[in-house]
Amino acid sequence: MDSRAGRPVTAPVLVGRDPELAVVKSLLARVADGGGSLLVLGDPGIGKSALVQAAIRRARDRGMRVLACAGAESEAHLSFAGLHQLLRPVLAQAAGLPAGQREALLTALGMAGGPAPAVPVVGLAVLELLGAGGAPVLAVAEDVHWLDASTCEVLAFVARRLGADPVGLLGTARDTELEGNPLAAARLPELRLGPLDPLAAAALLDARAVLDPAVRQRVLAEAAGNPLALVELPLAAPGHYDGADPGGPIPLTRRLERAFASRLPGLAEVTLTVLLAAGLNDGDALAEALAAAGRVAGTDVPAADLTAAVTAGLAEVDGSSVRFRHPLVRSAVREAVGLARRQAMHRALAEVLAGAPNGRCGTRRRRRPGRTSGWPRTWRRPRAGPPAAGQP
Image (cartoon, rainbow, N blue to C red):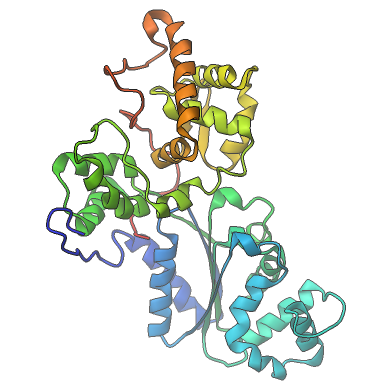
């Protein structure tokens, strides 16, 4: 949306994802010759779904049938929920399966009674069903990290046996949330999506919004190459800068909150407290964040309390420094807690910094008068994947 004239601005379907599209095209070309699989990995909002949608369009243009399912955190405990979603359009063809496979599949999907079937038998039934029509098929599984374990086991079984039938499997996942997932253990070919490079990021932003130059630079800095952020931040930026402190962070939209704050509720309270200290601190000194968190918690807080945040892909600890994987995680943490907790942490940080020589610690930059928190002046982009572009 043009922030000054209110005119919609049409963005390209994808920006700068040519190398990734080439990988997808290669997968689709192999399907007709005997199938293949690909697991697309990346952070929230990095463009996984956009790449999948491009693959689906290209598959249909090639005359392929597309079957799809998507993991949902609320259904992750329901056995074979994802498999039922994937196969529902073709379940009528299950009547042509061998009796044992048919009964195993229908039992797994809750459509027939009997004891729980063995995964290999269900997997064979799925293979037969996908290849039954003879036409090429692309099976898409999005958000694999939220798919139920039974579905992931079956898909892993299927993926390891592709090669005789014209069937392709394309999945997406957050790589930081795949620990113990059967599809991760299957060692499928992987495509890791990294952030957009500066030129592609600017192109995507300019295609979606016309912003004041100063606001544009702030959005580019805060988005740090994340396509979803480049699309969503301009929706909040114009109103935010109407008389607002230009040093403060742009608030997150609901889509950004869902993307970057979804892993916060599962963290221990002390871990969230350390993240809040790091999020409100202008520097990246781990000792400062731990000391401030300890003052708020009323007890010593060790660096080990950040382990869960590192495992979840929210933060990185490098020697004496703690950094967020993406600047918007910092914003999500600040917005996830109430005003009282932020104020308490500001007081704790002030007390910690007052004890440092000259009120500074390490490479800390002195705060501007009246500035309590805001966007970091510098940002070291996480070391993740090749710089590429796409949009959510």
